[in-house]
Every structure is written in C-alpha cells, then in structure tokens.
Length: 259
Ligand SMILES: Cc1cc2nc3c(=O)[nH]c(=O)nc-3n(C[C@H](O)[C@H](O)[C@H](O)COP(=O)(O)OP(=O)(O)OC[C@H]3O[C@@H](n4cnc5c(N)ncnc54)[C@H](O)[C@@H]3O)c2cc1C
Ligand code: FES
Image (cartoon, rainbow, N blue to C red; front, side, top):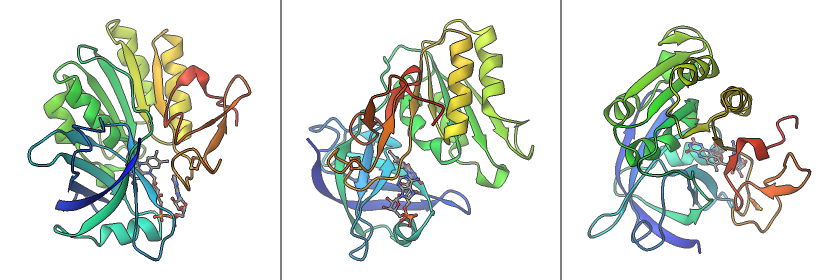
C-alpha cells in the first residue's frame, strides 16, 4: 500500500552535466513497506506542479534510524528542473512504494542492460546479485556516462557503449547483448531499462538466445496508482495494462512492440 513519506535529502550530487543523484532519508519505506530498486517514487515537485513525477529507485537500503533511498534523475522539464535545485537538508514529499520491480533471485547471474537514464534502476539489481552479474551500459556520448564505477564495483564485467564512439564500443547495446549471450549460457535473465527502441532491440536479442527478458517501461503518468488510465499500454495479447500498477517491469514477450 503506497504511503506519503516526507524524505530529507541527505546528499545531493551532480553526476555529470545532465544528471543528479540524491540520497534520501526515507523513514521505514524499505524495512516496513519493502521498497526496492526497480520500483519507483512519485515525487512532489513543488506546490506549483499538481502532478507528481515518477522517479525510479536506484538503491534502497534498510538502515537505522531511517532507511536510505538513492534516486538519479535528469532534467527534462519544469518538474525535474525544480528537483535539481533542491539541496541537502531540503525535504521532499514522495508517494511509495509504487510499481512491481524486477523479479530475480540473489544467486542469479543477470545481464543488466541500461540506456541513458535507464541505467540507474539497474544498480540495485547489481547490488542484490553482487559479484555475479554483467552490465552493458549505453550512453549517447562520454559526457552523459554515469554510475560506471558503481557498476564496476558490483558486477563481474561492465561493457560500455556510446552512440558516437566517444566511450567504449561504438554502437548500440543489443550488439553487445548478442555477443555476451552467444558465449555465456549461465545468464538467468536479461533486465533492461531505457528508451523503447533499445528495449525492443534487447528483447529481440534475448529471444534469439531463448533467455528470459524483463523490461522496465516508461509512460507519462498522472496518478501513479492505477486510477486515471493515463499510463495504459496495449499488450501483445490485445489487453491493456497500467505501467504504474502492473509494471513498470513486464516480461518482454508480453509487450506489443509494434505500437
Ligand atoms: C516508472 C518511471 C520511472 C522513471 N524513472 C526515472 C528516473 O529514475 N530518472 C529520471 O530522470 N527520469 C525517470 N523517469 C522519467 C521522469 O518521470 C520524467 O522525466 C519526468 O516526469 C519529467 O517531468 P518534468 O516536469 O521535468 O517534465 P515535463 O515534460 O514538464 O512533465 C510534464 C508531465 O509529463 C510527465 N512526463 C514527462 N515526461 C515523462 C516521462 N518520460 N515519463 C513519465 N512521465 C513523464 C510528468 O510526470 C508531468 O506530469 C521515469 C518515468 C517513469 C514512468
Ligand atoms: S498514472 Fe494513473 S493509471 Fe497509471
């Protein structure tokens, strides 16, 4: 059951020209409500914005006296611009836990595939499967890279890609996904988060190798709790689902990739 929690920002860090990382004191949201990475918070971005903004949980840590939750975001419009002006000590109203999160076991070897601002929600899965998973991280260019050292600490291997060749492999992440799956038959699941064309390509690559693929989808949201139909999407079987309540994580084969 989502609750409203007033969270104090304990640290606010700029990761690069475009992205901010906040660590929040989040009451008992992890211990009592089971908040975990891959779910999302609905964040109130100032009195002037009626609608909250969905931001994924990057890391969730049960702690004393209060739990800690890390979020990472880029400025896209007025709401996230307001958020980027908050400082350590400021307080945020968040609604959480929301969404389902990825499904994986602690002992699983995962292939984590992130694109751009889709990278942060996968860090929690890297921490959960510490020392077992592989990450493929794609960015438009080197200036937009983020959290690379955090993934290196937690994964057996980190493969970097960029659209313009300024970082790692020149090209898209699905090429590297194919290369890894062709060599490694121990991957339990591919977990992907990023823009829809990237997710479609990664889903196709995983299907070619018969590996389970879970994708985290992004839709414009209003209520965040399944009440307004704002985030409804069509599934492969013709039914409609809510990204906020039934997702944001779906089995790739459930998704209608043609809409
Ligand atoms: C489940 C989920 C998790 C997300 N996690 C992150 C994250 O970890 N980091 C991050 O930087 N961004 C994340 N986003 C995208 C983020 O919510 C949007 O960038 C943000 O809502 C834009 O708000 P704005 O006021 O800055 O932009 P505006 O364009 O001014 O927003 C206007 C309205 O559109 C909605 N909106 C605009 N773009 C999006 C979008 N892409 N997705 C959903 N709603 C949108 C806003 O909620 C608002 O109601 C996530 C989106 C979803 C659905
Ligand atoms: S945002 Fe209202 S139903 Fe999903």
